[in-house]
Image 1 (spheres, rainbow, N blue to C red):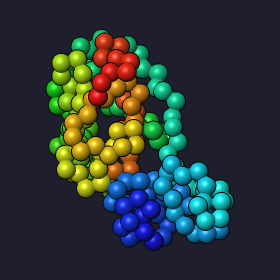
Image 2 (cartoon, rainbow, N blue to C red; image 1 turned 135 degrees about the vertical axis):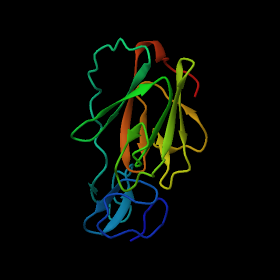
Image 3 (cartoon, rainbow, N blue to C red; image 1 turned 90 degrees about the vertical axis):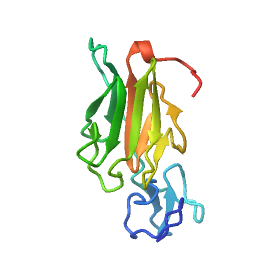
Image 4 (tube, helix red, strand yellow; image 1 turned 30 degrees about the vertical axis):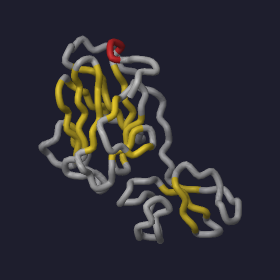
Length: 173
């Protein structure tokens, strides 16, 4: 079958596209796949089933007195893992040399970098194969992160939790 987003060939039973990282929903009667933001089948109007990522409740994180920590990334899976975001550069990828290691097939060896400086955090893709997405939009240049943002590295989603001094409602990206 073809991914409905990037049109690359992927296995028939895929839950996500290994090329663009899009979660896939399926119409069982039509056997067609749709992107994760679809609500119903465009052919028969039937309900879609599949692996659209569930949105987890915000984490309960106690105040951290370490001034080097800007905030945390936590995954949206059933077994949440929390990663501290330290002052400076925080590298993300499948390689063991990264500050945040995500050992998943859709995550590149050196996938992205989070830059924590001057009271703000920027995310930048590191020419990854499956892309870095901020709130569902693929990024091609450094973008500012805000409290509550959703980051996706390939097919892996994480929520951004920032300490109070780094939160700015409606800040420019």
